[in-house]
Image 1 (cartoon, rainbow, N blue to C red):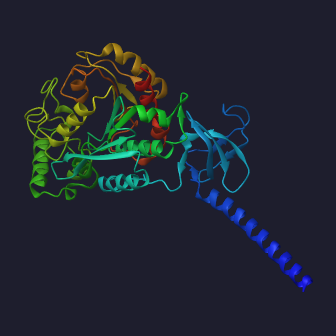
Image 2 (cartoon, rainbow, N blue to C red):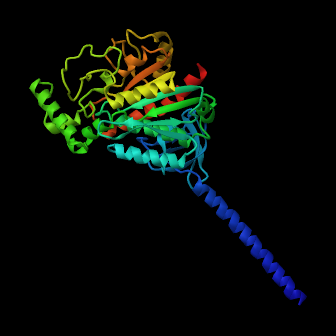
Image 3 (cartoon, rainbow, N blue to C red):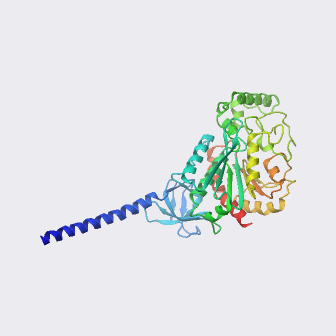
Length: 416
């Protein structure tokens, strides 16, 4: 009987140890599986992985596109320590070439308003304490206009980033949405210039208007069928007739719409602001480009962007346009040339675009903010180097140029 009890006890002990070992092994495997997995993208011949965080010397390995990795440390500025997924191989890489495998913001062709709305909803579910979403109005064709706030909405400093004010420049809304997701994803472990993302975004609220002109973008992407209102379709057709008659275009109707810049009223939103309104205008009525409207802020889209600007009092504004890989940073009439000189030089040390000379005010958003009472630094990046709308093959270069813009602007606002 005693022998039987001993055997039972021994068996029980072995069984418990087995269960314990199985539990630990399963937990370890589950932990690795649950940690976010990233994949290498846009790396050309392959992404170099180094033993040292300076990313110098002979690479440990060259990782082709599609390689799965996990981040062990960082990103610290633009580099991160990684482990090849499912192995013990570790090293350092350029973070700009990694994308989360289950990323919400994903596209490889045309990023639409509907995709953006869906992405906003999913980001809000994944990052409910870090992202705040405001609907700031409706477009001419009744699409919601969004303001997204990253981090602490009550932070002492604010920056504002906007994209898609010109319809055919619709690669930029995708860019700013991907910038947003990257900052959200890495919020609890990223650093920039020795400042953690947590510290930066607790003290600097990042306000993003990802798609200023959703109607015009839909029109450029899909033609007149993208508009919901029959009256607006007639307006667009009238614009084409006018632009043909005045020789502003010789294109087919399809190509004309693809090159559309204005909103669905035929108003160029970046000519619909107060300062310099109506100057140097050679368009007398609604058109695909250049028509400033009847009065400043006549359009709901420009009025919405203006209201967001006045409410958040940004010390820095990043404007995204296309094309030419150039940057506009000032106007002749600007009240803030002195403070903007240092800021623009800093941003162009990160994004190596050609710095353009100061122009004269012509009713643009940039003209308006430089005339206001709130001192503001701003830069307008013109992404891409081919005519808009350009193909997706332009995007890999654009992303690597601009992947750190949000962090850099937030850090500048925080330290100046």
